[in-house]
Image 1 (cartoon, one colour):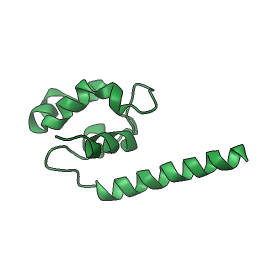
Image 2 (cartoon, rainbow, N blue to C red; image 1 turned 30 degrees about the vertical axis):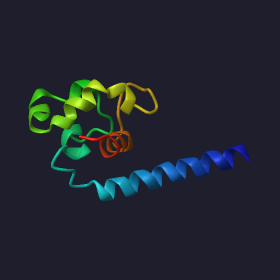
Image 3 (cartoon, rainbow, N blue to C red; image 1 turned 90 degrees about the vertical axis):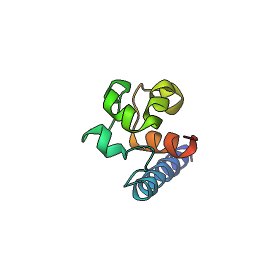
Length: 92
């Protein structure tokens, strides 16, 4: 029974990630899509957010200062779900 819950949770997270990816594929005028700043990587570190992106997209400065809040699994990196979740749920 415990494995069933884990599998259901994993499926729900994967589905949410795919939905978020489809919805946010083009990003927003206030922040870029994950793929643009991750440069092909699956994880994004705080250092990956460079000054050029922060000046063009001010929401990235907020992300950098609240990186620990956005890092839901506390692995010191953001995956696409965490990035999209933070950007869509935080006022910019």
